[in-house]
Image 1 (cartoon, rainbow, N blue to C red):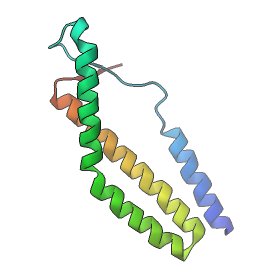
Image 2 (tube, rainbow, N blue to C red; image 1 turned 90 degrees about the vertical axis):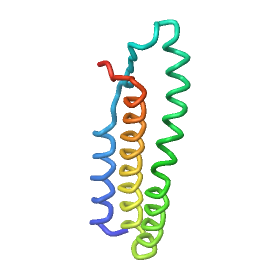
Image 3 (cartoon, helix red, strand yellow; image 1 turned 180 degrees about the horizontal axis):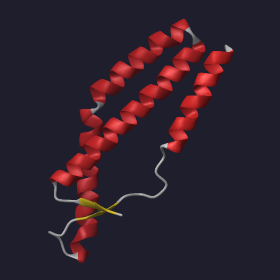
Image 4 (tube, rainbow, N blue to C red; image 1 turned 60 degrees about the vertical axis):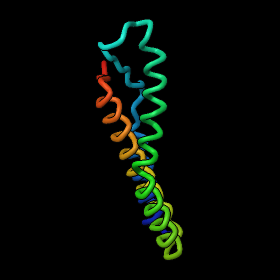
Length: 110
């Protein structure tokens, strides 16, 4: 692996770690009583997680193809491309999940 490829991987890994959220988001929905919130949130989270994965399936497949073709050119470049692709997919899934919960009346509480 070349020196520039190693540096790119280190930079990308650092960016991935610095972007990690350390505390989970707490969601609230005023439509439900405290007794109902846990079960409704569990169902809505399950449904929204499925929605997020379904809505990003094409992106994940295209990123897998790009990472495979980049990997054949350069092992370091392929690894860097794969990490960037995973970050992009994770961000798209998180955005889809969050928008789904918001559409169901949930709001983040921090």
